[in-house]
Image 1: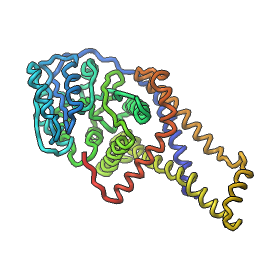
Image 2 (image 1 turned 90 degrees about the vertical axis):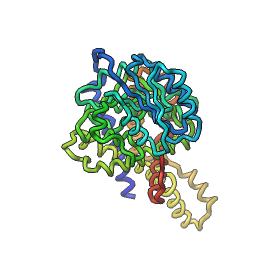
Image 3 (image 1 turned 120 degrees about the horizontal axis):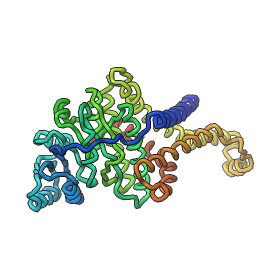
Length: 415
């Protein structure tokens, strides 16, 4: 019981502390986009790893060639990673119909996304390398907005990623989730604390990628591992607010759970690999602040899950069994007495108060993420917010407990 109380108290304290700290970061440093002057166009390689993407690859390619950028400076490399559908056929037909663009199709046996990206990296001819998932669609001006920021010791520039649709409850939750996460990344970027460079249109300096060894083929989340390695080599990562890319999200709870399961397992493995960065002042705020924060986020989710299970299932059950033992296990009498003896004093007002504070701060963050991402909260966020606030904490708990079970079972998960 004491362990549960300590865990819950710590969970609320850390949640409020982090929310207030980041709000103070906004006040002190601001998060407005740094103005940049247009730069001369440079050669750009766009790598598209594809595995059974027949439903989306054509749309992805159409958006790429629609970029407001000189076609002679664009190199598009599609790596078909052992697809068993018509991905390769659709891509080849697209190439045949657009011979005025430099588009290359590389077919290889299924080896995973990281290997596919390394294949494209080895074949790249330009000094800018962009990863684009085969189910993501870039806006026409995104490349032009990102390009001026990739200079000096900046290894990667990231667009603001949004989902393509919000027509059911799981998509509404992901709408809020994506806006919050990328809004937070922008803020953490002011401290050089970005720990993941997501696949949809992440831009890199090619020579830096090659210098640090390319993408790790032994991790579930190569986009997070490469970001940690970039930070380890003291390069910078910039998150933008005005450059946008859209991605196709999972449309069912099962699909969402499986995706997050892979992401969070990858986080565990990457943290183990780069554990020497944790609380290491040689890596600045990333080592002192961001790496421990990743661990705390997982512990907070598990603590919340333990609290919910204890407070709503285990503790009430034990209390009922204890009470029933005094009345010879007369369940009918127990139910009657339970109604009669209800009191407002039974409510844990301390927990209720801190829950209200967390919800209020979350609401501030959600509204802020809409404002800074140029989305209308009343139109797109108002109905999604209650669903997110009520369900999302429980959904994250389910994912983490599923991961614990998988790790205990030794389950192997592939791309």
